[in-house]
Length: 431
Image 1: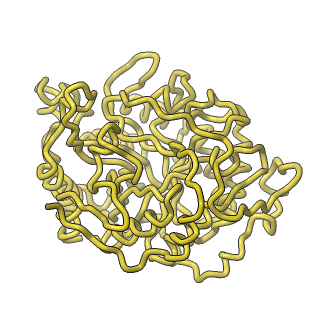
Image 2: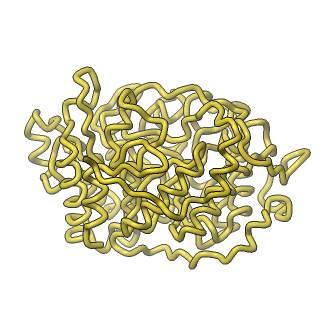
Image 3: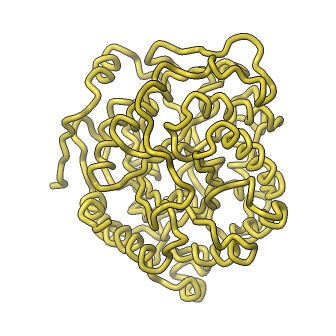
C-alpha cells in the first residue's frame, strides 16, 4: 500500500464553493517534460475559461499601451492588504527546493498540494499562469479569479511562488493555438504590467516562457535565440519596473542535441542567446534550465552517457548536462549568476509504445535518483545552483494514458494525498 496523507488545512470555503460549480473544460497551461523533444499533442485551450468565482474585471475600456500610463489602481485587488511575504533576494540558498503543482481548475486540490509541498520541507511551488486564461477574451479584459485564489493560497500556506508565463491568447497571434511569442511584444509587456502590479511583493519569481529551443513552444516557427532575447528584455523591463525584488528566470531549455526545423540543441541555443544579449543584465536574474535524468543515474558523467547508446548517446541525456550549460554561462561572464532548474525528474512510463519507455525507471529508482540529484547538486554545484523544482505533484485529472502521469511523485486523488515512494523519500531527505 502507498502511504496516504490526509490534509487538515484544506481551504474549506473554496471546496464548498466548488461543490456547486461546474468545473468546465480544462486547459493546458503548462508544457510537460520534453527531454527527447517529443511529447503528446496538447489539448485545445479555450480562450474563454469557465468562471468558478465571481470575476474581477479591474481594467475596462481601451487597454493602455505603455508602462507609464497603466492605471495602477485598476489592477490592485483588496487582497494586497494581506501581510506581504519576506522580500526575495536575487541570490538564493544553494539549493532551494521546489515542486510543481496544478491548482488552476481544482483550487481545493491545489491548497492540499501546496500544504503537501510545505510539509515535505520544500519552500517553493511552481504554477503555470497561462496568459490566454487570464486575458483571453481580449486585450485589457482580465479574469483574475483563479490567480487571486492561487496567490492567496500560497501566501497563506507559506510557500514561495514561481509562476510560469506563456501560452499567448488568440488575439495576440504568435502561431496560436501553439505556445508562441506574441506578434507584438508590447502586448506581453502590458499583460505583465497588469499582473505584476496586482501581485507586487506576493509572487517571488516569474519564469518567462518555456523551452524556446523547440518549435512547438515557439509558435511552430524555427527556434530563434535573437527573438527570445527580445522577449526576455521586454518582460524583464515590465516586471522590474514595478517589482524590483521579483526574480526573472529565463524559460527552461529542453536538453537535446537534435538540429532540425523543429529543434535546436540547448547548448547551441544558449551560446547564441548570449551572443545576441551581449550581457544577461536586463534579461534575466537566473538562467532557467531543464534537467531530466533520462536513463542515467544523477551522478553519471555526460561523457559516459555520450559514449553509450544504451543511455541515448548524447551528453544532453543526463542530469549532469547542467554542468555543460554552466560552462557556457561562465564563458560569457555570468559566473556570478545562479541556475534555476525549472523541471527535472525521471519517468516510470511502462507503456511500450511511449516515446519515453526507453528510459523508464521503477518508482523506487525514481525516488532514489531524485534524492541523489538534490544531494549531488548541493555537494558539487554550490553556490551557483539556486532553485531546483522537480516534476510533479500530479495534476488531479491525469490518468495512466497521459505521459506526464508517469513523471509524477503522487497519484491522483482527493481528499487523500496518495504518495508514491519519491514523495516520502524527498520528505525524509535532509534539506
